[in-house]
Amino acid sequence: MTAGTNNKSETMAPRALGNTEQNWCRAVSSGTGITVLALQMDKSPSPENSDLDKILDRVQKSHPLLRSKLHYNPTTKSFSFLAPTTPKIHLEFHDAPPVITNHSPEISPLHSVLEHEMNSTNWSEPSSFPTDGAEVILATVYKAPPSDDVAAAAKSVVVLRFHTSVCDRTTAVALLRELMELVAEETTAAEDGVGGGGIGKVIKNEGEGKTGIENMIPNGMAKKTIWGHGRDMLGYSVSSLRLTNLTFNNSKRPRVSHLVRLQITKHHTALILAGCKFRGIKLCGALSAAALIAAHSTKLTSDHKLKKKYGVVTLIDCRSLLEPPLSVHHFGFYHSAILNTHTVNGTENFWDLAKACYTEFASYKESNKHFSDMADLNFLMSKAMENPSLTPSSSLRTSLVTVFEEPVIDNSGEIRKKIGVEDYVGCASTHGVGPSIAMFDTVRDGELDCACVYPSPLHSREQMNDLVDRMKRILIDETY
Image (cartoon, rainbow, N blue to C red; front, top):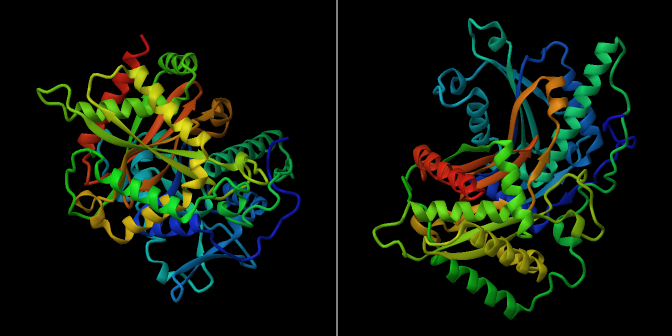
């Protein structure tokens, strides 16, 4: 029996957002943190009798946080979750937008729609939220553009867009898996000639959304004196001023989020993962090192020992570390970050740098900096949003690259084929405050697939294609 609805349709009481959630609400308003799942389907759901609509209802009933709305108080400039009496995910159907019909041959319809959705403005003006709150999840089906190819014309892109205050990467991954299992259940029922909509197994997510991450940090792990906070914030501030950025293409024009995909074959992915395992590190160390070397190689002159310092942010899913611990089915935002800096001169051995990146990150995590520095990083992030001029060229860049401690492992190829999912990408916008490149890595059926999101036109597509190509060559070359 597949995962489906929670037998108890739990209701979440209205509550004020925690500091991290509040910060992400401000980040979303600036352009960072619009989370998007986009799926390329081999056919388009019917607006008149859509199983997807019913399945979204079932998922929403399982998750109190998805039934909430986001309310903004303009007096206090704070956000809270409200519990509506009749929650409903509204599934919209649209013809192919101009971004699909006018896309360049190098960019797929899936890619075009994903960028279009990441740059939506639904949550950019909290003061314009409805009095009963804004929806935290939006669902849209885009039909394929007209085509003489009957199969191509029948396709569609299904998009789920989330406010990051309710959806970190773990939430997006868990929701995608629940959705695919439910669609497969409906497909099997239709093939067998019986009705779908079964109960499914119970999702164990009691207490979902009842409090923010700060209130669940184990006792003592976030403790720091006021002098300690001051010292660390000063250290982060001074260090950030010394960090090297990618060359800015245009720092004046309004920004949007664009995407480049880094995809590596199963053979080379296996070699990369084996190299990490042999050295006792995680994939995030290798991705960080590849990004550092690739970025530095774009700055090399005749002096091949030019030293530059770069920032790497690693995001950690804290669910299992909280008190009480949470499961992946507890939706919400429960990630924290660790910022490390690394000096690169262009002569580094890839695997030595990968080990150094991971070892320093792991040391910081062992010292509980993902908890003790949470308030400091939130404060500095908010100050950067309030005063962009504090960042180089008002770019709002806080690091070179952001990676996740753990990759998403997805071996759902058979179920994707069964339900007609030809391709999918999940990522979040970064054109407000954030890195030059945010890497959302998945090992999908043994193949590495990274969605690399960047702010445009601060960086150009040509520039980022070149950077990602360099990273790919580094990762592949170092496996031999």
